[in-house]
Image (cartoon, rainbow, N blue to C red; front, side, top):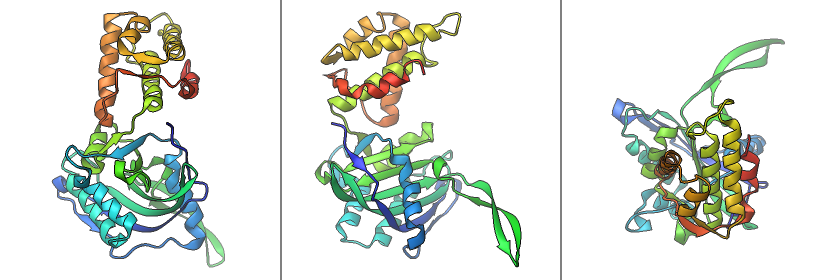
Length: 311
């Protein structure tokens, strides 16, 4: 089931801030001494900016191999939601946990923002949420201002909200199963650090989610650089035909079987089958989630995948 999530009336604040260095490289951790309150006149815009990355989302849940209570990030978030501990204390604890997990020299230092969210909506019910954002880059920008009756221009540096590197939004719903966690990581190769080491999350899966994920994976593979299909035009026509074949495979069945997919869509081509398995395995590793080779197909989830064919 695709979860109905809305942010139209959601507001952000207060905020705990931190600067998280790379401890392997000898950089330090700096955390807020006080909770930062967002000014009333800035609150609406601030809320829009930090929630924007979660408008399209993949849903995860907190997980642990032995017991959910042993997931330290989950336990910390639960205490924030319950109000049993101070937001400042637990926000700083999350920053310290992230710093402790920064154990590879290639992980970039960055600014951390942990914000309370009010009035998000899950399945038409208002819920609180917690937003955690990490920005690893600052960008230069120009600022024009009035100065003693004249105008002046200055250069400054700041965070571009459209280029925040890592983030998660934890919705206070379904606590027993690890909450609903929306997350992203633009770091690519470092996504394991964010998803597995710091958050400890797994993809939420049911038939509708699996349908979307596997169909999207198939179309992206068949149209992408990893596809072995070639031709005079770079294989565009062949790739589009193969992607359409994949969509038709999902639309004409109630059940997905990887064996049948390999036979009918990949045409038992050894190179195609091998490369698709590698492509799928990379997705599973990066997202800390194996994708089933056998599930019920939810055809209503294919509309967005259709639009990607030929694009």
